[in-house]
Image: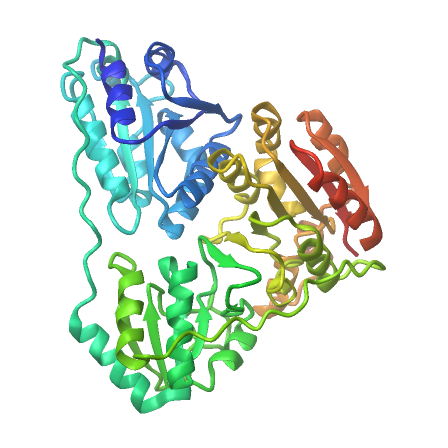
Length: 515
């Protein structure tokens, strides 16, 4: 058994059975091992950012890490944008990065680089394999680190000779510690603040608190105390739809967010971070909380967030049941000209039960939440790290994790161009994903940011943010990747195409011409 084979056996024993890959020469023995060792599903991505974005989407839905296979420092560098997003989502991920054989590095061959230096800022755990005899143990440690609460990025650098040289037997899985409990003091202090300040408290939820049970506990607390319940701005996964609670997020625009949080004297963080503006803006604060607002951490992201909010609910709302969600009627597809609200209502009206929504709508999708509260039950995945180009890979990974569920991607056109190759992998893998591309032919978010920072743009600046001349043709782009597509110029056509897409399996793309 060589090192690569012992590593694959170890990954499988540790529960990692899916590998998103874009390999090169240094990884060929690992590739060969995937042939000889049964059990690992291998998914090819044509760009490294697709590989890591898909691993993120997979982890969010499968609730376990996938492996990625990347080629040397430059391949890792191509992958880093979506590793950053995955780290912000707290998704577990095991990156296997091939490198030159240890004895070949001194020759400074063209692909030689400081792979550890590239990986370190984006990894929670990092190790370079030194021997084929130890590479299986390194792999077990990587999986252990990735699965540690709340989910970590583990990067194992695999020199080529550690893959082909003779190795020892595979290594048994290493134990993964349960997340630590929030301290009694954290819970008691939160209870006192709620009892003292009531409606002046905002509970800011993230992570496990945004699953159905966590939301129910939060609404018990709100019902008993008058506190406000909100989700943080960007979230890895929220369970939403009829029978669940209509939780709003902290808005993205600074002025809107400041107004939304202005009424509160206390903010209790439930797995969430302190709410801050995405960027600094002249004359505006970085913190989105009002001056003097008291901030208390009920549970850190690495603690048992679900248990902490249940404990808090038992303290302040003992004997109080959560109110039943006040479901309204399911939205109907409105037809007519394209508006942001109309898009959201159409999607809400036509999505099937248990769909997975992947949202990289950026500008067009900013107001989708209020119009989709009464949609059928679904999961909503967001871009978490702000590095655009993850929507298509997220949809790919979510579909690989949950092949029985329909995935609907709400996708900005400029962002989609970063990782267009994900469509090819969707076609190859037969992913049941419908992608709606909001084709406004511009980086609309950046046009708004020019105004927000007071940059006073002229023609040259505006041209830098324009995607016309020539216009992107998304139906042809999708067709070139093996995905059928069609254009919708109004909401009636969007509804027709969605009905067709929901009634069939496989990937489909709708180019929505957004004014």
